[in-house]
Image (cartoon, rainbow, N blue to C red; front, side):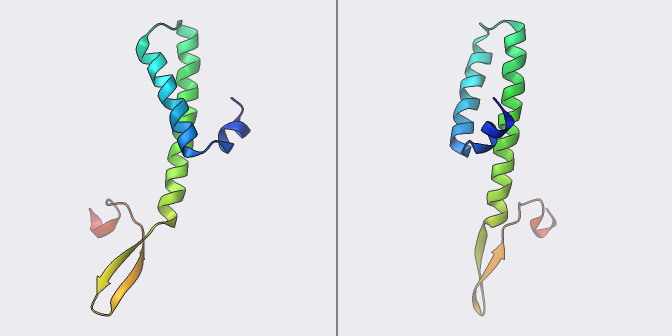
Length: 84
């Protein structure tokens, strides 16, 4: 799959292709060279999905209740929030 084609995939499409690759690799019926190619494609898809998730996380805002009402707070993963 060309890089341009992979970038045009939606998160769901990439996950579906990744699931298919995982099934093939877990099945163990593929020759070693094919398994390596599938693994590499899976890694590209995994990176694509991770990037798409990061983009979404940057857009998410959470509402927190304060004495003044609700405020918008930019999404922060647990490791960045409250020093955890």
